[in-house]
Image (cartoon, rainbow, N blue to C red; front, top):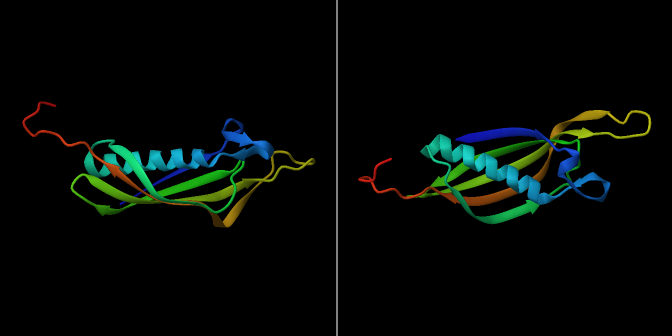
Length: 129
């Protein structure tokens, strides 16, 4: 099972000089994809409990479009191990002559990769919904 979202990073996402986006913003997108995967798989939003691996490969800037892909790797009793990838698919090409210029990146650039675990709540089958 796989979930994908595509988001444009805005000026509000820029956290550092030069319009650099904080890596935590990408991790928040991984959380959004994890939530969708859990809803599709289990009918419950569940909880993100831990990242086992996070690697930042390339910078993300305001104006860039990021595509986030999440996949369930392993299903336990209540745990779901997931793998996440974030790719830059369009980048802003700011310059003095055309401040709104942008270009499609082909092939997309891997900016962040992570592996994490989510859990779904344990419910008593006799409990009313």
